Image 1: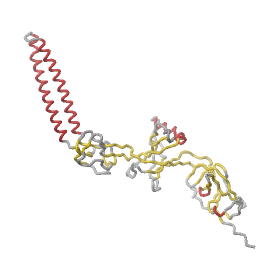
Image 2 (image 1 turned 180 degrees about the vertical axis):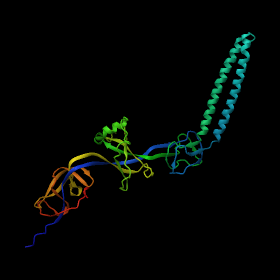
Image 3 (image 1 turned 90 degrees about the horizontal axis):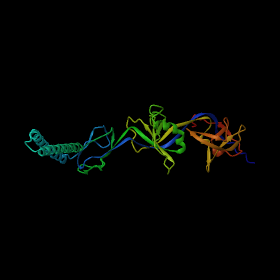
Image 4 (image 1 turned 45 degrees about the vertical axis):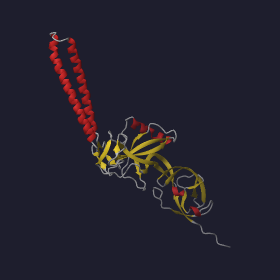
Length: 355
């Protein structure tokens, strides 16, 4: 007779029970804390670009210059018209001053004085209108210099030197990236878990930045951004098409590493699971949406147990049904084990994170 097959070696880990923080992750899209679209307020030909694309600019820095000559000419014209109206006002004032005593002496008709007074009022209104035109001309001349309204990273210029630009032309966009926003979409259930805190921030009853910073940002390369973020705001409504609500967090970004448009994942501690039953994730078998683990009995017999899973905590998995603390589950050698078979269990080296 052929000898019986050797008893397979497997590595087992003990089911543990402890309080664990529960973390959740969401896909995040980064955006500037403020995104200022730079557009000219007058129409003219672009003469110069004063900044380098992609560099940091400060509020008040000169970015672009539009040809000022047409606006200088208009300013001179309006100043000339103002001088004319002022001269006319001076003449009418002299007329009123001269004719007032004559009218009292009946040396001239009263109607003549009335006409002088009306002419003076009209001249005064003309001066005010001319002054307004001069102010507008000066303002338009100043608008030929386009300045930055915020501190931030200036994007690539959308217009080239010599282009005819106007109020509808986008010259560039400046994004304030320190701090920088990270947008995520929460389901209604997830929102309700954090609704009280979000509402407190919305009503000004709590300053999330001054409180706990518990948001972690995981970047596209898997690294974790060194500073933690805070809740900024939630959108005013749930999107009826997706059943989600948009929530913004913010992260200090002094080195300007993070940029708008980057993708990442936001991780946050959402709750504390009390006396949670934990097994390493590699011990859990998934088959057509059903989950099970292989339990090794005290006499080293294998039994396959269906389980219900909860949250993942690091490399561990919370099981809500199917196993009890102290039982042993197979984490290595699953392919060698069968229902009812005898195995040779060896303790696996498992860290607190289940690795």
